[in-house]
Length: 586
Image 1: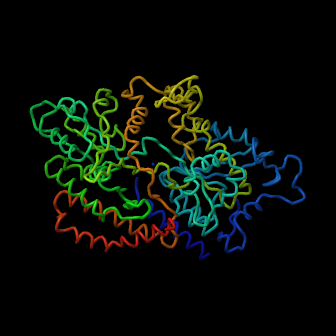
Image 2 (image 1 turned 30 degrees about the vertical axis):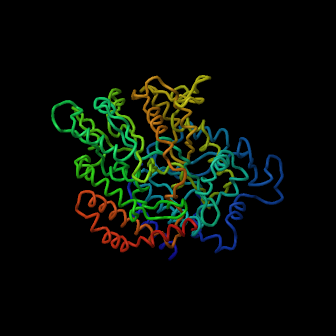
Image 3 (image 1 turned 135 degrees about the vertical axis):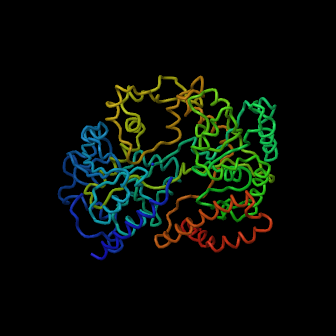
């Protein structure tokens, strides 16, 4: 009883902590301990759960391994129908009995998924209460709100033994998942917990345009009018911004133009865009970066390069080239300024272009073009990479110790949730309504083979198309697959071709994306998790505040730098770096 009470208290505290970090079964039994406590490995536990009597092994239709009637390859997964219970985030108002994707699984795999749904608004709290109360199903499928973090894996898998390891299944039965790991070993490494086991199914995401955040867009029509060329270094960038502010490029006879504007939300801060492009790699809310040797870990906001970047950004601010509202407004207010007529914003910072200009206006879409990163005084020239693309940030499915058929559950997720064709069904709907195969010989936006074409769904077809959707749970939206559904088009500036436009923009800056970076979300040792999170939270507030103070002059870069470094020490930066290095094995 004490153990369950403590687990419940921990779950509630985890829920409260995660809620503050913004950015979209069987019988009850006893509380489960770790495999080490029981003296039996989790692999043995899961294999025993549905293996049946030894004398039954080898009978007709059974696999040499796994439960009776299980097929290691092909369909059906089970020779006789079974039911697995699955808790999902969202979909509380959906009639899942009519869902075509679930019917497809039942028909082909002989596995019925009995859905237990909960509203997304309180899904994280419900998930943690469910786990703490020992009242959970065979499978847990999440979206972003209730995603299982690496801290959750440390708690509920390694410590409590609730989530089963799937490492052995990947190599024995894996089809799609094994291929993903073989193609990109970093995914396997990022999914593997410190004990060497894999406990969850991640979303393997490679949104191509997301690999380059933040971006800066400038008005090409102003550049043409003022006879300016694309800047290649920070001083040339300064000259462009001066011309925007001082030479009346909007032609209204007033000095109302803005050099560059940003905001405080998403990846829109001007200060981090300019810093990360030309001086020092900096990932806001993480703050660590690789040293010059490509191996060591350094705290970006304490480096000499960071100080030099502050000096440059402050000089732009002092000249009136950075709009002061950038340090207080949200991105929607920034967009209003960008869309003001006559147009006043020469450059703006964003994740992707339509966070600024009006995407329904193809003329404005063409007026704004992406800035190629400019070199700093020492030649540093990078494209920001502040999104988590290509890394494992969490897990959207786990198999619990209540599951009597873990092998079958693994194959179900591997075959149906990581398949390209089923991805099209889950996220685009019915073939012929939401999508279709591209005609033979079609090319994608980069000139390689296009495989799919996404269709505009009419209002009368929407209800039918929605029956095919199942967006919760893991997926593999890898770069090549995503690009295969972006056919080449004549005019990338039309609203319906926006994905093609931002993909081509990203291609222009791709060469400046560093090949190697630190893992933003490692497995932090459980006993250090709270300490690491507390230090990081406090640092986030301090560093975001002080960079603006240095730029606006509230703090003195020259005479106040040592005091700033001393203040950083009080925020336990050394301990923050130490914990991180422990997590990554340095």
